[in-house]
Amino acid sequence: MTQFIGTIVCIACIAWLFYLDRESDAQPSHALWIPTLWLLICGSRSISEWLAMRPTVSLALQYSESSPIDAAFYSILIFAGVTVLNFRAPQVRGFLRQNLPLLLFVTYCALSVWWSDYPFIAFKRWGKSVGDVVMIMIVLTDAHPKLAIRCLFKRTAFVLLPLSVLFITCFPGLGSGYNAEDMTMMYFGVATFKNMLGLIAMVCGLFSLWVATCALEDRTMPHRQRHLFAHLIVFAIAGWLIIKADSMTSLACLALVGAVMVLIGQRSILRWHPGVPLVLIAALALPAIAIFLNPLDSVLHTLGRNSTLTGRKLIWHAVLSLRTNPFFGTGFESFWLGNRLETVWHMSVDGIQEAHNGYIEVYLNLGWCGVALLGAVMVSGYQRALAELRGDRQDARLRLAFLTATLVFSMTEAGFRMLSPIWLAFLLAASDCPPFSIAKEEIGIPRLHWLRAAPPKPVRILR
Image 1 (cartoon, rainbow, N blue to C red):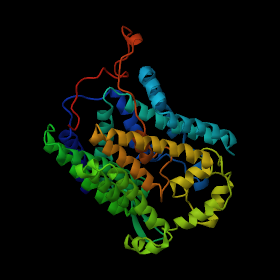
Image 2 (cartoon, helix red, strand yellow):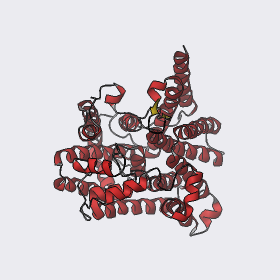
Image 3 (spheres, rainbow, N blue to C red):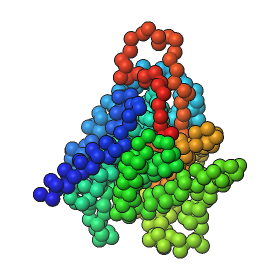
Image 4 (cartoon, helix red, strand yellow):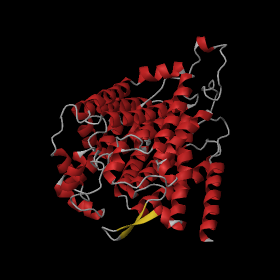
C-alpha cells in the first residue's frame, strides 16, 4: 500500500512541477524529445537494466561486451537524430564552422580507433560518442536553442529526481543496495551507483539553481513566482539526493559552482575587468589544492574522506605505471580492456572501470594529443562564455557553471566520458551555433516540419 501511495504522489509531483514551469510563449521542436530520451537514459540506467535483461557475466566481460538491446536503442536514436539534422543542413554547416576544436577532437578520436588493441569495440564506442554530438546539435540547431536547452534539462530533472526519491523511500530493492565491504547501505535511486546518482543530481541542481537565480534577479519575468518555486523544490531534492548518496564530489561541485554562479552575476564582479577570470581561477584552484597537496588533508577528513581519496591515489598510481603510449594513448575508450583491466584490479581496487580522474582517463586513451585537443575545446568554450557575459549575462552564467563543474568534477571522477550527463552538459556549454536563418534554397521546398527547426519568433526566455 505504501508503494502504491508513493507512486501516485511521485507522479502527481512530476506533473505539478511541469505545470508550474510551463512555457506560454513558445515551444521547442518536437525533435527535442530525441536528446531528451538520450539524456534520461544516460542519467539513469540502460534500457537492458530497466528491463532487467542484462546477461549475468563477469565484470570484465560486461565492460567489453555491450547489450544488443542497448546497442539497438542508441542506434535508433542516432539514426533519428541524423534524420533531423538532415533537414537542418544550413544550421549544421554553421555549427561545424563555429566549433572547429570540437570537430578536431572527435576526428582524432576516430583516428585513434586504428591503433587500439580492440578496434571493433573502440569503433562501436566512438559511434556512441558521436551520438552525444548529434544530440547537442539537435538542441543547438533548434529555432530557440536557449529554450531547447532549458526544456532538455527541465524534463530530465523533473523526471529523474522525483523518481530517485520514490525508489529510495518506497522501492529500496530498486533504489538502494547493501555494500558488503563497508557494511553500509548504498543509495543510488534511478542510477546504478551512488556517484552516478550524485552526478545527475548535481547537474540538475545547478540548472535549477540557475533558473531560480535568474527569477530572483529579474522581477519582470512572466510567471516569476511559479518558476522560482518549482526550481527551488528541484534544487532541494537534488541536494537531499546527493547527501543521501554520500557523493562528496558532487556535493562539493554543487556548492562550489553554485557560489561561482552567484558571484559572477554580481555587478561589482562584472565591472571589475579581471573579476570573473579570478573567480573562475579560484574555483579551479581550491579543489586542486585540497586534493593534490598533503598539507590540506584536514579538509578531506572534514569532508569524510581520507588522504588517499577513497583509494583514488592508489588507482592513479596503478594506471600510470602501465606505461601506455604517452603521445597517442591506447586508442579511444580502449584502456580498460583485456589484460590492462585485470592488472589494474590486482594493483588497486577490484571492479573499477575508470581512473577516477578525467584528465588521466583522456591521457590513457588518447595520449597528450587528445589532452591538448580537449584543452582547445575547453579554452574555446571559456572564451565564448566570457565574451557572452557582455551581452547575455544569464545564459553565460549557465555556460560557465557547466564548464567549471566539469573541470572540477573531473579531478576525482571520469568526467570526459561518452554517455555521461556531465559530458553532455560540457559539450552544450563549450559549443555554439550561429543564429538561425532560412537558406534561400529551402524556400518553396516541402519539409517535415516537426523535424526542421521552425522559423524564429519573438520569445521571452528568463528576461
